[in-house]
Image (cartoon, rainbow, N blue to C red; front, side):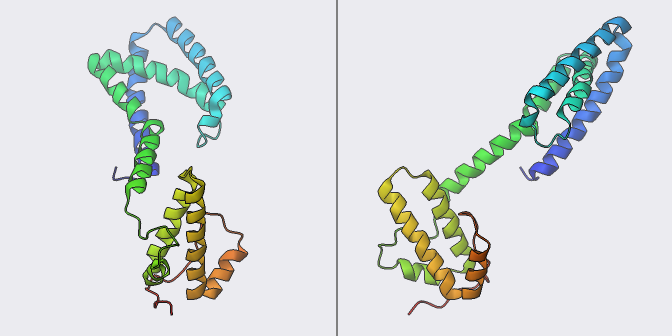
Length: 212
């Protein structure tokens, strides 16, 4: 997908607002007022209850209960109105909106991204026992060195082999040795921040001279 998740979310919400507005306007012309009031009250209660019980599942929603109270009636009226206007095509439109929602597309994009990263070629062989391992590190530009650090971090978290874990941990130690050799000040500043395993020191993206 060519847009970022935030852009996609905004675009999706804009489409939903337009569709629901048309649907609600249509529903008010075909539903009896007594039934419509009953429907609004019922769906407001259901929406508010849902927001109170499962609001944590939507961290970008500031007031999940209020949002549920408002969204419940609007969605129900909007769906009735869209189906009244478009018939089967309205149902298809609602289905497309549902399956393209950020809550469906977001996890799918993240899953595909993880799989792509898992199959991306490694910039180095993560085995510090290889005779050319230090030379591999010394020849890498800073950006590739950062990639090697990210690769070994991911491999370290995914491996179930103790031997493999030790090999990767040793490899990461040698990567940090190379970083310190290139830029001791940047390395010291990075350590002073108590960095997490996934962070990496800021280095200039230029090849380093080979180690002596």
